Image 1: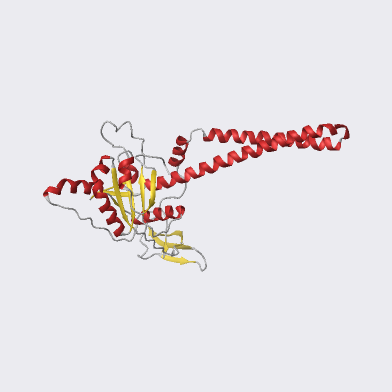
Image 2 (image 1 turned 90 degrees about the vertical axis):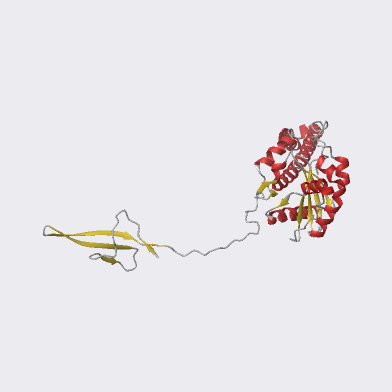
Length: 328
């Protein structure tokens, strides 16, 4: 399709306009004969044709209706890494300084050794020079090892924090019309993610019933994720005498994951890193700060959660907020 772009507007369809297109050229002319007071003039406008080439169309579909999060290390993860290990950068700086100092000393010792070997009068100095060169090489090797170990620990920590950051960006439905990122529950709840087929979710629900009240007192909320796509239906006793336990059970299991593709991708990555079969049902227990405190294959140990986690209310709420267990 040809399109014409000009600062002059006119009707191309009405005569007496004349159009002339040069063969093999992208330019064309419009001319009009104008008669005014017995004088005839011609008005011409030159234009250029712009041909819009059709572009191939690409249809991209996503079950999650949402782009996947970037696999790059976020600035938030880097800041958290610095907070968790504030002196790591200082140590790495000094390691590099000692490596540079040792390398420079080794270079000087090497030149002195060459000069001593070429000069018989300095033969007695060779032993001392070799001793100094050995110390320099040993220092460089030790500090290079320490730097490498520190750098590997930093990369591992950043990778772990990046995965936790990706986890915090996954979405949860907390009400019929309210969807929030998992990270918004930091400091408010200890989440337990149950991921597996629908029968696994239902059995986990059944095993948690005796500990419902104790789990809620410790701020535990469960996120059931059915990996087989069959949403489990929890059966609650709606009788009058079981009204309170039913309300507590609904509250414990009130969360639901949304954007299933994103959840599946994140879980598959964790299973691959842990060397677990993709079909294995797993659980993950999060601390109040959103970091992973425990995980495993099979059903969550509800009784262990009750025994290990402090209540979030009462006289111990402020004192034991950090007693969530070590970070994996």
